[in-house]
Image (cartoon, rainbow, N blue to C red; front, top):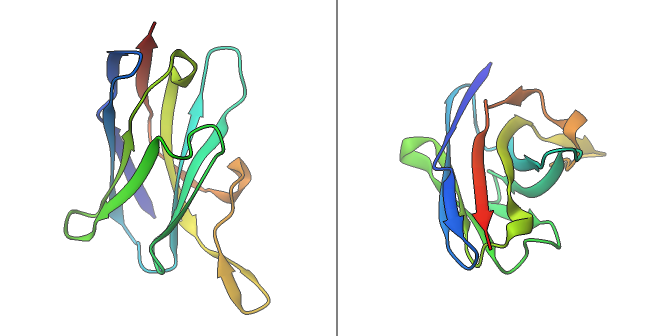
Length: 130
């Protein structure tokens, strides 16, 4: 079991920055994948970034690459999503999600789809005004 709590959302003007936090408790280790998703009103939930704890690697959606950065504070069991150069199109509820890495043969990897994640936080709202 993993419990996730997001925080850090808020309202900013376009071009501004926010840092979201996802604090995890419960069973997590180097095989844990943690992903950020977002859902805008009337739209499907979409992936933003996927962090693989073991190798410490992150993949980003094209829409946020170069503007968003994931980092980790292992001592606090917290993963951050630093969001810079925010655009009105980034307005959404942001969720963190976690699960164990999957295996492709003997190679572990983190999925990028909703169904790849069993544990979800409650979400934090980000609103970007023009």
